[in-house]
Length: 190
Image (cartoon, rainbow, N blue to C red; front, side):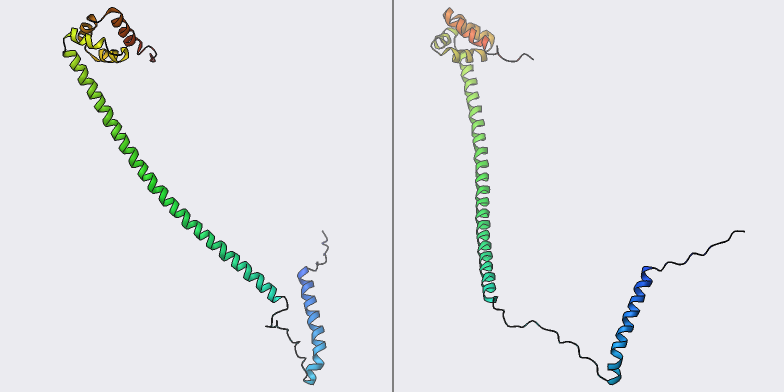
């Protein structure tokens, strides 16, 4: 048979705190009991209220607060003015950007129109040279700049270009042929 030993209970922290509260209450009751018996209850100590009168440093403190408030108001006014200036500048920039985009669109349209007109003019002039008698056209081509003449001849149908070049001096026809052949020499092959 096994004998069990009983261990004493440990006093908890809460038990100690409760005991201290009870002891404190008893001590106070013992001190107040005679006064209660005589009908004399001690008056509570008067609570000191902060006086409504300013402390001697109050004028300096008040002035410092007023100065700080004035600085803050001035800063706020400055920020408001800056915000208004920025809003006006932003509006102007938007208007200028819109005007710039409109001008860019008009310029692109004008350039396209000019390119198309130039292309039409060159095509028409090329057709005129093709319809001329080869000897007459060769007379004009012999006075043209070689690059310019090569541009027209490259646009013509091969039989018309051949007839005009046959009527040109040999050195001139050779120079135009070199320009036409060399135009795409540096173009990528793939």
